[in-house]
Image 1 (cartoon, helix red, strand yellow):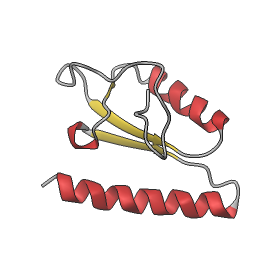
Image 2 (cartoon, rainbow, N blue to C red; image 1 turned 30 degrees about the horizontal axis):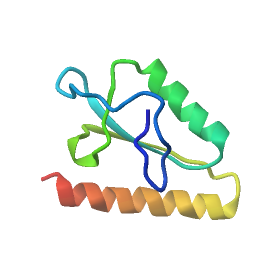
Image 3 (cartoon, rainbow, N blue to C red; image 1 turned 180 degrees about the vertical axis):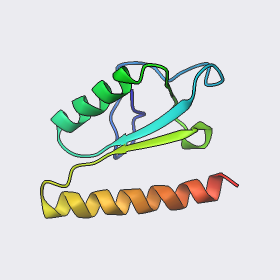
Image 4 (cartoon, one colour; image 1 turned 90 degrees about the vertical axis):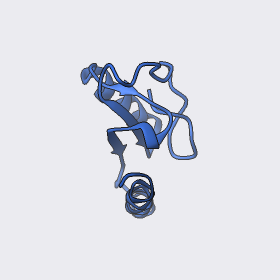
Length: 92
């Protein structure tokens, strides 16, 4: 359900074609394959969300991180900060 990019994974469910029908969500999943499965499960349990592959079309940005080891914690912090800056550049 997450769009494919360097920090996310290729979705098993295609991006939503009707983001106006439900709140649009863009997600980034960091960490091991188990964490990525956890992200898919979270999105499935929130079934009313519409996954999009463009952060500019998202009403919600979900970042599922892992901080089990120090490098992962640093990557998580960096990704959150970079995503916040990216959103500021897109949204008024």
